[in-house]
Amino acid sequence: MGTSEWFVVSALQAGLKRIGAPDPRPIDGDFGALTEAAVRAYQTARVVSEGVGAADGIVGDLTWWAPAGAAGATLASLCALAIA
Image 1 (cartoon, helix red, strand yellow):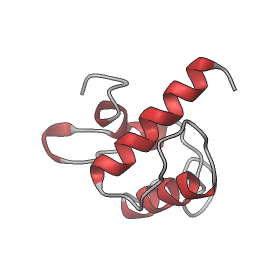
Image 2 (image 1 turned 180 degrees about the vertical axis):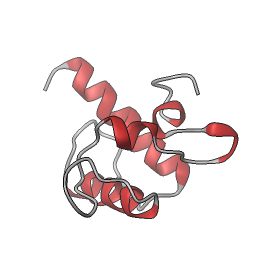
Image 3 (image 1 turned 45 degrees about the horizontal axis):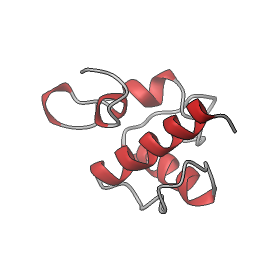
Image 4 (image 1 turned 135 degrees about the vertical axis):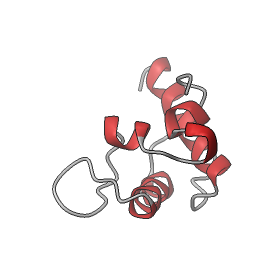
């Protein structure tokens, strides 16, 4: 995994922790089983699916930009990857 992928996954893990999703610990830049479970829980809570059907654990545009909190926050903004 390259540095940019590690950075994005680490930011994702930190953002999921920040919004109170199931803990994707540790923040290690590895998209492992705990991170996938946290993404699925986030998607289920916000009725987001990147593919067909239920939460799929894929972090694409729909997941990054789904409303994640007050004042128009999104997962991307909470991960400091975009400005809301």
